[in-house]
Structures are given as structure tokens and as C-alpha cells.
Amino acid sequence: MTEARRRQFKVGRVVSNKMQKTVVVAVDYLKPHPLYRKIIRRTSKFHAHDEQQCRIGDIVRIGETRPLSKTKRWEVVEIIKRNEEA
Image (cartoon, rainbow, N blue to C red; front, top):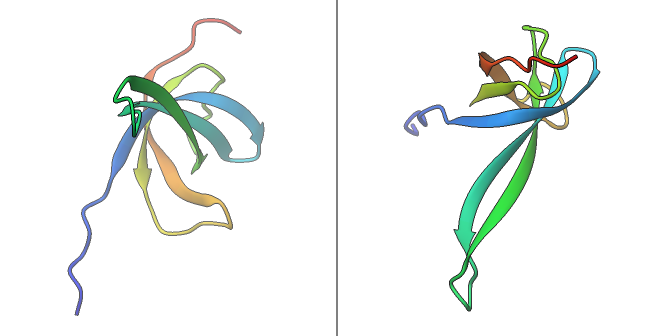
């Protein structure tokens, strides 16, 4: 029997909410260049299940969950900061 993995959480910005109950969250992280060791900013996009009606520009916390579709493996846990525009 395998041990249960601890649930991962990430904080990112909502960049798309065009789908029904799904948002795309961009998560920025810093990584050193493999040869030159300069710190580079990288962005990963995650599809997340959204029951909380997020808007573009919101800062959200997403958590790992079971596969919900072909691309959705994350869900919006909380909205940290609402986007004031729109």
C-alpha cells in the first residue's frame, strides 16, 4: 500500500474565465538558468475547477484534486484578492 501524498497548493492569477466552472490560473516561479545560474521568472498555467465565480485578475489559491477532466487537476480553494476593475 502506498502512502497518501500531501495535497499541494499554489497561488496564482486568473488569466481566463471563459469556460463554464473552469478558470486558467497563471503561477509565476523563479528558476535558475541551467548553465549561467541567472534567476529567470517562469509561468505555468493550470486549469482549475471554479465554484466561486472568479474574475480575470483575481489572485487565488488552488489545490490539487482528483482528475476532473482531461486537463483539470486543480480546484480553486479560496480567492485571496479580488480584482477591483471590471
